[in-house]
Amino acid sequence: MSEFTDALRVSGAVRLADIDPAATPGSAGSKREGAAALEEGGARLAALQERLFAASRGGGTRAALLIVQGMDTSGKGGIMRHVVGQVDPQGVAIRAFKAPTEEERAHDFLWRIERALPGPGMLGVFDRSHYEDVLIHRVRGLSAPAEVESRYGRIVAFEQGLLDRGIEVVKVMLHISREEQGARLLERLDRPEKHWKYNPGDVDERQEWDAYMEAYEVAIERTGIAVPWHVVPADRKWFARLAVQELLIEALERIDPRWPEADFDVAAERERLLATG
Amino acid sequence: MSEFTDALRVSGAVRLADIDPAATPGSAGSKREGAAALEEGGARLAALQERLFAASRGGGTRAALLIVQGMDTSGKGGIMRHVVGQVDPQGVAIRAFKAPTEEERAHDFLWRIERALPGPGMLGVFDRSHYEDVLIHRVRGLSAPAEVESRYGRIVAFEQGLLDRGIEVVKVMLHISREEQGARLLERLDRPEKHWKYNPGDVDERQEWDAYMEAYEVAIERTGIAVPWHVVPADRKWFARLAVQELLIEALERIDPRWPEADFDVAAERERLLATG
Image (cartoon, chains in turn red, orange):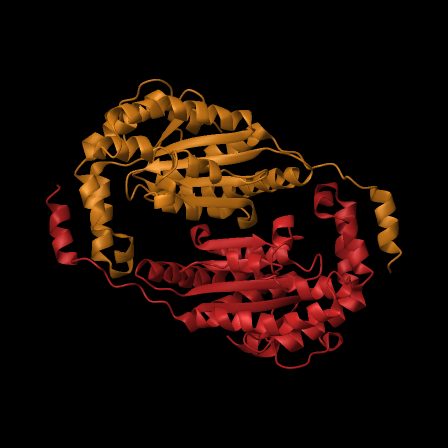
């Protein structure tokens, strides 16, 4: 089980250059075995999610939140489709955070995050998140350095607040190599049915690769206090999906949701039902 | 293709008692063959949904909306899980309409519906809908008869407006037998892990079965003008899922979404990307 997570969890400082994006730690499998494992894990994930959802109908207040960060093409969409897509869509709330709207910019950076948090019983998923406010904001100078500096501590306090409210949080950075990103962007250009996924701005961001890696290192080191980070090697899509699935399964196992007790008299209801013929 | 839909589409008056809830029109298959067909159809549905989503990124404004109505235990949740769950969750917005909140009650009955409509490129799914306002409201007298009476025409106008805005709408009534509902409710009582799905109010509603069937007949006859109704026999879950899947596939085929054209110079971007090394 936690072969994955032990190897992926980061505590303290991290040097991304020392983590091989093509690694498959804790998994000796091949792409094909990975696909089989992903399907098998999907059944476990779906069963746990159903219990989480059910528990909330009995008054349970716990929820789960998966935060997915990563460079363009790192596979965030694939995680949504192939891992999050394995559970009942009625119990999932996916939110993709794009460049903030005018209304969002008029508020504190955590305002739109707070509004997107999962309710009781739900699995919330963030495709990008408040971490953009210390990543692109640092690299592109969208906020003053002192403002960015202040955000790390505020993020830690915010995430501690999520835990205090019973939200189990999983933070993942999908770690791809610069070479793999180049290949994936090229594929988007060379296949007309993938053009819609390509944005000229992606190349602008790619030109700041080293600055982004540094911004990730700082963010990971400074915000792993309440909720630890997991750096998931993502050059092999099958491995990244399997790893995130396992992290989700473990998070739900920590919640250990139980079927709620009936809040009605089962025997009496049985009689009442049978009387209807 | 439309063996299903031709047989399920209703125009004008309908007598639900004349439609066998255990029928499998247009499908000679068994439960096992149905499961295989459902998986195969899932790939087609997912491919169409991806194109719908992609088209919106190129400025396309079309969207799809599936409205699912049916008595308790008719399988609405199973449609969400097993059909809607087959497509990329990033492109789906499911909304379950429960008893209205105080804020919702302070507005017109279509207010909360309007706010839940799918945006461009999205597949919206309503688990119950504005039809509750002419079903339970009629049966339980929650609104005055004249008010209920006025709603049929307003629903037709509202749905015509959806079509005018480019929203392709599919309306489905999951048609189960009273006997099958009894068996499914009993199963919820007899299996502790299903207790959370049981609500004593379900038996109260069951006692009004005939009144509900009549309310459905009136609603179907009076609101099938802009968007036709489909009555889907639902005693066999595999058939109902397959039928709704096919209805969705056909709706997306009517939209016939196309991959958007690149709004950038592909050759120039290719050069710019390769220059980054």
